[in-house]
Amino acid sequence: MGEVKWTKEQTLAIKEKGQNILVSAAAGSGKTAVLVERIINKIINEKIDIDRILVVTFTKAVASEMRGKILDAIYKEIEKDPNNSHLQKQITLLAKASICTIDAFCLDIVKNNFFEIGISPNLKIAEGTEIEILKEETLEDLFEEKYEAQDKEFLELINTYTSYKGDEKLKEIILGIYRFMQSIPFPEKWLEEKVEMLNIEKTSFEKTVWGEILLKKVKDSLKDGILRLENELENLKYEENAPKMTVILTEDIRKINKIYELNTWDEVYNGINEFSPDRFSGDKEVPDEVKKRIKNTRTKIKDEIKGLTNTIMLYTSDEANEDVKSMYDSLSRIKNLVIEFSDRLAKAKQDRNIMDFNDIEHFALRILNSSEENHVAEKYREKYEEILIDEYQDSNLVQEYILNSISKGNNIFMVGDVKQSIYKFRQARPELFIEKYETYKDIEELKEGDNLKIQLFKNFRSRKNILDLTNIVFSNIMSKELGDIDYNEKEYLNLGAEYPEGKNLETEIHVIDLKEEEESIYKGEEKNSEEVERVEDILLEAKFVARKIKDLINSGYMICNKDKSYRKITYKDIAILLRSAQSLAPIYEQEISKLNLPVFCDTSARVS
Image 1 (cartoon, rainbow, N blue to C red):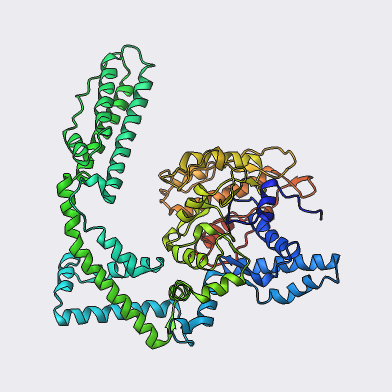
Image 2: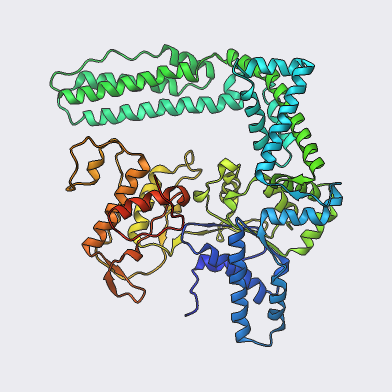
């Protein structure tokens, strides 16, 4: 196999150093290969021992795979230079090198420095089920004590958040806040600060953090209405003799735009409450379907704007401030209850000599931040020449604090793709990636003291037709508001690999209308006379995929071999990618088998 030809951007990502580096690596851009090559370059060319590099991966499997690739690369270099003692040493050091998940790294910190924060050296990691049961028991005991003591604050919360059915709603609130807090570096301090935000002074409501967000939402809705009316007005230009409707639409736009341009909460509140579009009057010579469409559009926009008075613009500025202020006492009580629950749960874990993964991260953070001149953090700073973080878009704030605590300030190398962030539900913070993406400099703009951004947007996995369609879809659905970035030409996936020309390479997207009957997918197939029953969405998709596979095989579709020759497609050339193989694969397996097609999946199971 020939030597890999790295692109200019990949070479930068492999060799550049001297500052923090963020690599924005799009799908199929060779991210893992670049990351491994950077480590190899550190070992071979910069003569850095592998145990002086910290590599943080997202899963154990990736860590194991990376360790194996590094070992293979070292052996290849030793074949070229058998007497190289530095390379031979790396094989020994690799066994204890820090190539691991963040959890494993934090556990190492805790095990080696437990005495710094006065915890037991024999703490064991509890199973998730054990922790959940302990949470429920601790919360139940806390509630029972509050009931028995007739605690005034607690009883007021019960009256506010529960019903005659029980106190489960309040328990859910306490547990929900507690879980979220675990992704925050200093959770109790954070909770105090967030509750104090409700203790607002008298001010115009749009100047508060909530008012600003809500007013933007209102203006976005108004702007959407304006754009839809402008579109109708533009289409009306193609109709002759439509003066009445042109005047009506123009006046609608003027009235909504007048509200849109207002600045204060009360101005917008009054504008929306007073909004009253003119009565619709259609021009005789305009087709009925056009009049009906424009009338429906106006009615929808009117209802949406008036609907804002029932959802967002419920109160004047003073009333909104009072409403927020009234929440302060209630949330202060919730805060106190959450903190008391947290303290009791920590004590219950200590009594059982157990901890969970969130505890490990927070213990590690406490160890590394126990004092300003922390000798433990300094020890790790001296140990690691570089810190490499894979899948950085899925890091949370606790992990960010931990890794920054042990960095030299200019030796963190981060790789990720914010478009692939899927763990917000676990409190991952893609905004950490975005902030660096927006502030780090390209190599051409880099000055002393700046951090570097490298973009890997060449895709080596797909043909141009796939990339072009992906770019079209993403550019239409991904924006700063939805997806955290504006997907424009700077973000496009670009062709990175050469493929032989072929026939029938058009990309297909099939959108299944779930409202249609099942037979729409089985055109030409015989159906029994009984009415076709509606099937679950996933079953409908599985039926479609099975039919598509059969059609591909029957059509003699030609595919390209590695040697660039062509042959007819076979069953083994087809793979089905699913969101969740364990639950979905058996359904697909059954539907494919019904068509007498060979199928295999690792999670084979009967579907009744």
